[in-house]
Length: 213
Image (cartoon, rainbow, N blue to C red; front, side, top):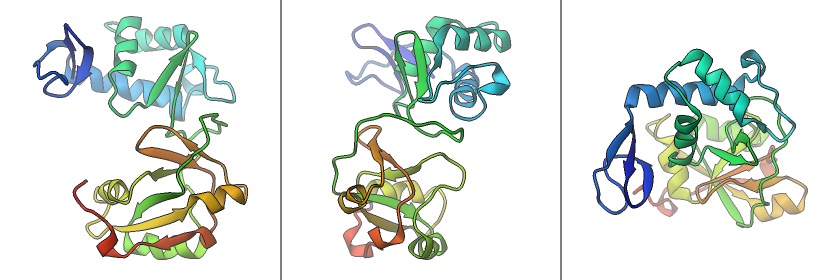
């Protein structure tokens, strides 16, 4: 659900950062419907929706609004912008009447976010996945880029949604980038990367992984 705070604007969750409960702006069902459609158009199947996406992942915001309204008559440009600007995971961005997903693509795009500056990055996996990754390197099976976490605890937390016994792989990001692997910062939690060869990877000992999320 998207709510509005008179002082801080749109937000999601129970309360605004100031503690105000907020006024309903878009209910949970419609937020989910709109979110699925936008994700499909900007990450996975733009052509199926009649959207023209450039090599950097940008599509025309007005055209996306038309597509959304053709499927959900209640939708509007205001609601679409609200969905994007209130997203706590910062999935999307708007610039000069263009909109794109910042990460999570399965279509072939060449994103141009800023280069990663962190010397080490992390990836959460099951025990079986971890052993395989150390053999063949870290590559994405379904997405354009590998999605890495900026801290070991974040990687561990992400992996708990897939396995009950997460392993955290540490990537020597500085050395990998020096060797030509492109890594880009999406936000404070996520860095996306091209395939990372196994020589830059190791599994962290359990004692070195804070598990408070």
